[in-house]
Image (cartoon, rainbow, N blue to C red; front, side):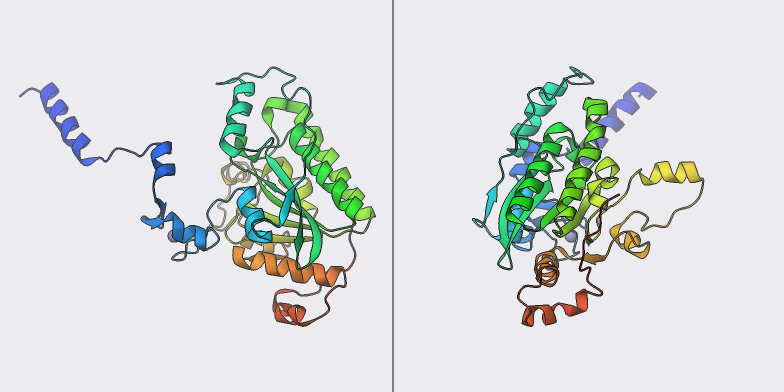
Length: 311
Ligand SMILES: [Zn+2]
């Protein structure tokens, strides 16, 4: 046996012991999801607000699942936001055509853009909410997403109700370049209109919440709630580490770490977010001054009673 045949036979042996990786379609068709190193039934995760009951890992949820969890199956109504005529003015091509990426994102998510907005009721209070779908090109933000946020803010101002924003984004969309970056300002101006009307603005940081969205409207909430374990950052940890040339703590850029630095007001398990927002809104709007405020009082200290302009 020469060295070539020895290598060939070793490769054959490796093939038999290394299990073939499951494809994306096989994973989505499976009844199980991998968590804390073992398979966990998807049904069990779903029944627990998409949180692992064993290790408390908060799994991905899309805006439809988020709104259904927060407001109930049929208690929210989608806001139909306008779409721009030409979402690809630069005719962008990288490894794929941007136009094809848009078609694919629409097909995967069933959404017109990365943001879905709705009107709903929470704790019997009218609210408007928007949530980002990270599966839409990494939850990146361009013109259609900004239009969606502005349509939601307009609805909140017309209805004189609070606005809730659930952030989960990789940042602004490079395929639309400067036209994407200016949306940070447009959306912030929109939030300021909300604040001029003295309407509460609550931000939920879901994972990962990074880049330009975090550097604009996801940082301007009157109250900022971090979903347990979520990443909240501008630049990534490795970039910061290389720039600063220093060791960073293990919990760097988690919402728990951001709370210690004053960027987040509270970190909550997913199941506690909706009842806490209900209580916060009751206090901010001076409604239902009753038992449920007492119930969750331990979670809320020094509530903000007036809104501040975003910077
Ligand atoms: Zn787990």
